Image (cartoon, rainbow, N blue to C red; front, top):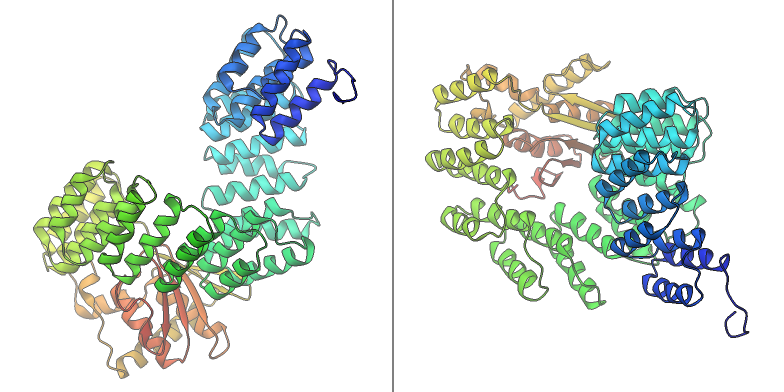
Length: 581
């Protein structure tokens, strides 16, 4: 246009500036800004507002303040600019300023500010906006209700969000996406999958955002069958593997559902692999104990010219941890700092300290904690407490427990970890004292729950659960399992029962753990020789781990179990973790 001698005007620049803003071309935007100044068009309201969208926010604020008459469009540009930069508090303050000068917000304003409330957790302002929307008669506006659902979900009030969703006369794909995403955000994975099935029945076509919200729920519940169905749907309807985020989510889902081979196939089929794709693959292999493969992928990634980030090294150090190799972990930890100039974070320290604890190197672990550039968190002290239980270090465990109580005084898990140490040492008076303290504080131990997928339906069990419609058959199978285990010479490890009771009662308590119930249901509900996949929210106990090894041999089944720490592949009486987890 310039080469042909045509002069741009006040209509040309807004389009150019908005294009620069969308493409993130800040430098080019500043060059266009120079042309605006040369032509004396900076006072034009539309040009001025468009300039706000491309500058750094300090420059944008100056431009905004220079506008003689600020309308809703100008205010919206500033609010949107702050939101896009992640400066949500500033976006909210700008909205408050807009209110003070009595500029009426429009739909775009409300959607942007509600999004800022969602990201910053400003639920009170979000509720005020909800009342404003109702008072001004726009409570049926689908776009605004979608924004409200998203805000309430991300601020932790999923019940109000669901009430708004159910009250909508017309739901578009965004409505379903924000509600499913809200459930996923609040760890209500089962509810997310149930709602996704309702979405399919309502004939609303899911899009890539839908699957980015649903796949994490499949991953967390080990819902492999549904995950496979989604993969097939994506291949049929998207017809391209260039959606990097979507295929990375598939890699993560397959790995967390215990099918790392399928994860690798998805990875190899991707036309464009991002750093996140490599990270998902490395972490997926690591959690399965595929250490050599995980480190091999890391080498491939570096050789292909990608620079690893802190997340990459969490996966790499996790692989070293699952291999039980402190030497390897030290080597990669040092390389991360010296070769890649990455400052260690809590997760990096945690992997190395956990390994030191497993190896009984408590002095070295404490020395590393002293040298850390960040304060240790509960996960680090918790891993050392577990190591003290394994090595019988009661007094040291009490010292570590004090650190954990200071950080997380209301976390029942901290008290349970100390109880485990006392129980193994046979100090039942101390176990009772801890239990009394828990009761006095009104704290309850997080219940162990295990899920298993059968015919694309996820079934969840708690310890001693008798709510399942097939409970009678499940407990009959449990009795049969216990009988066969006894015949095979299995002796329950009753040291993990945190009550001083008769051995017979301890054995009964252990046999009703949630993972045993899930396995029993899997045995009665699936064909012989098929793989059973279960997912537990806590660390699998040693007794259930030993029992599951024998169950896999007795029933000739592969049992893939995911617990809080890693995957366990039980085959023919053995476990892939080699009894180290």
